[in-house]
Length: 311
Ligand SMILES: [Fe+2]
Image (cartoon, rainbow, N blue to C red; front, top):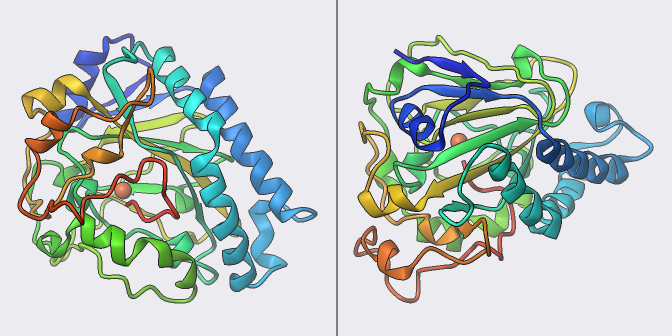
């Protein structure tokens, strides 16, 4: 059973335990999230002016939009304000900033389905982030920038939280993905040939869509099965997401149960401490290394991301 909490008064430890058991939290906008979506809105609206980002697909070609996104998405990822605002959002939710590590935020777009759904605007098929080398205790924070509709939101498959499904996650190695795929996202405009972990069985098509207001948050375990809903509305959807891990969970190898992830490598080198932007201690990361983490392949991407290749 998956329960959905809306703005509960709850301590961070108890909230994480619920998230690791499959529950989902909807959190109202705060000063921090308003600042974060405000920054993204300004960048989008400047880049697409005089057109609205919501209807840009009516006035530009997919190639033109991909070129613009290829410029502003990395700018957003690297924006110094993001590194100030995310720790603020953690504070607003009662999280100890010296124990919390975050990955840089992504700016996402989902255009009406005939337009642009690959490469820089990849429409993610049903997946768990843990199929892409995320640790079992990763939490995902997802925020819409403009009002959502059910058919341009994210879809969740709660029934599969504790039910394993056939999938190809064993083909995924994080270091290989970083070196071969990441820089090329802007080039995949009309189709996307990058090999990604996928479900290999028919899924029960019942999904749930959570529709917080702009700046509201859907907070969920990286082990939830989720997807980008095929956008059948006439408007583009823009959202921000980032991921966090808590050092206590890293140390005790906590988190959700692993029902079906078999990828190799780990994303643990990507997270930065909310209090001072330090990386996780190397001796802790080493506990998660497998034999794919050779010196020349291990990459520290926290500050050098090129695109939006995270699921
Ligand atoms: Fe994802």
